[in-house]
Image 1 (cartoon, rainbow, N blue to C red):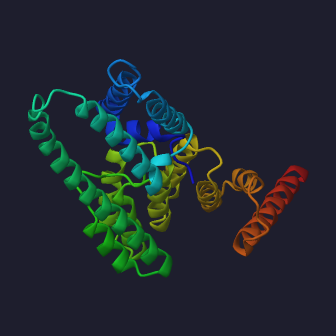
Image 2 (image 1 turned 180 degrees about the vertical axis):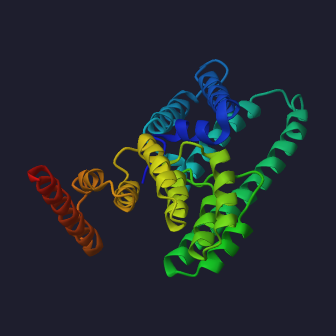
Length: 287
C-alpha cells in the first residue's frame, strides 16, 4: 500500500499549500512560546521543564518527517498536553485580566475544531465500515456506508483514498458502471495521481471489454506507482485479450505466480499460443 512518506507530505497532499503553511505557522508559534519560558528572570524555575517540553516537541516534529505519529491517540494527547502547559505557563505570568479577550478569540477556533473532529470521526468510521462490508462481499452495504460517510470537510482517508473510491468499487461489483464511473471521476478530482483510482478505472474498462482503453489507464497507474501488483496483473490480462501475448508474458514473468492458479493457467496458455504462432511462422517461411 502506497501513501505519502511522512506527515508533512500527507498534510500538503490533503490540504494543499495553505494547509501546510498553517501547520508550519502553528508549530513556529508553539516553539517561540516554548523558548520564551527559558528566560530565568521572567520565569524562574521553568528552565528544566521548559527544556523537556521543547525537547519533546522537537522529537515529535522530527518524527513527523518520516512517519505519522499523530495517528496514535497517545501522541496526539501528549502534543495537546505539552501545548497546554506551555501556553498556560505564559498566560499565568501575564498581568491579571490584561488578556481575557484572548479567550473570546479562541471560542470560534474551538467550535471549528469540534465540528472538524466530528466530521473526521464520522468519515473514518464509515471508511472502516465500507472496507469491512467490501471484504464480506456485501456490496450494497459498502455503497450505503460510503455514502453515509461523505463529508464536505474531509475528503481523503489516512492512505489518501477518497470516499468516492469505495462507492465506485461497490457499484462495480453490482455492475452499475455508469454510477461507478461518476464516482471515479469525482475521486480523481481529489487525488488525481493515486494509482489505485486508475487501476479501478481500468477494472471497469476491462469488465466492459474496453481493453485498449484499459491498457492506457493501467500504464498511467504503473507510471504513478511502478510495480503495483494489481495493475501489473490487469495489464497482463488486457494485453492477453488484445493478442499481445509477448507483452503479457513479459509482465507475468515479473509477478510471483506461485500462489495464483489462474495466473499460472494464463501463463501456460500464453506460452502455447506463442509456440503456435512461432510454428506457423516457420511453416510459412518454409513454403
